Every structure is written in C-alpha cells, then in structure tokens.
Length: 192
Image 1: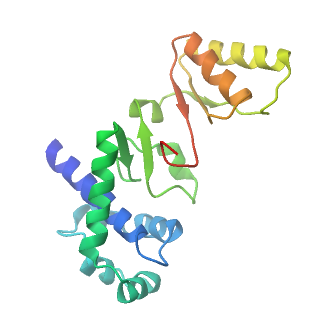
Image 2 (image 1 turned 60 degrees about the vertical axis):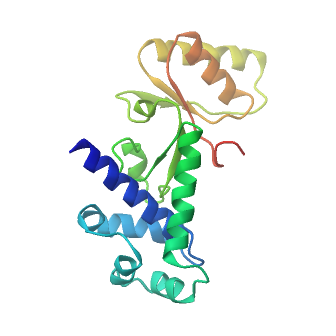
C-alpha cells in the first residue's frame, strides 16, 4: 500500500511537471487543477494527455494542441528532472504529497511543486516561527535575533527563514546553536 502511494505521488508530480512544460500553462493553472481536481488526480487510472484534455480547461487544451513537443517528451523531461533531483538527495513534492507543507496550502497561490533538500519532516512541525528582517542588522539586532531563534528552537520551534545575509542568517545560526531544526525557503531551484 505504501509503495502504491509513493508511485501515485510520483505520477502526480510527473503530471504537474509535464503540464508546466507546456507553453502557456503556468503555476496558476496547475494550482487550479490541483485544487479543483485533486480527487480525480488521486484516482485516475492514467495521468496523461488524454486526462489533461478531459479536464476541459481552455489553456491546457490549447497548449496541448499547439505544443511542439509530445506529452511523452514532456513526461520524459519530468522523469529526468526527478532522477536528477534524487541523485542530489532532493525531494520533489507536489501539493498532494504528505510531506508538502500543509500551512502553505492555506495560501491560494501555493507552488505546484517544491524542491526540498534535507528532512521533510521539518516542513509540517507542530510549532514553527518565521524570522526575517534586514540584510544589514545592527550588532544588537543580530545578537537579539540569534538569541531569540536559539530560545525558540530550544523550545521545539522550527525556525523558518530565507538564506539571505543578515537577519535570515542569524535566525538559522541561532536555531542551530540550540541543535534545533530550520527550514530555509528559496525562490529559486536548489543549486542556482
């Protein structure tokens, strides 16, 4: 049963990546499909071009008709991306994946795919706190931010921040000083 769930999760991820490979289909359309058709995504016998056409979404139908690349090529690209990610130790999560951050789904503009390096259990903690701020904190601000992150992490909070210099950095450092967990959010793919 677990293997079936993992296989279905990968099929959904491949489908989403193939959709995103179509010219004219972006994240917003993918999110709309996930939101409106999540039950059929989980139960359809095949997630392919025919399934995509059957959704009867104008942008998708038009993109499929006008695509210079076949659905099989788009799926091949998606499988290649997943293989590359796996070789780097990166998890590729779709919004229906159990590891996908549940709180992120409260936002109507959640990303249709997340690339995660590290412990995905940190994405859905009981307690978390976001810490962000200026790239040029004062000495006092940096010390206080680091100390606050350390105290929160020692109390079981996962500290969430970007990887920018300044306040983001001291938040991660403070959490790590307490042997806590952190989540670094980047708007670009891992490795770029």
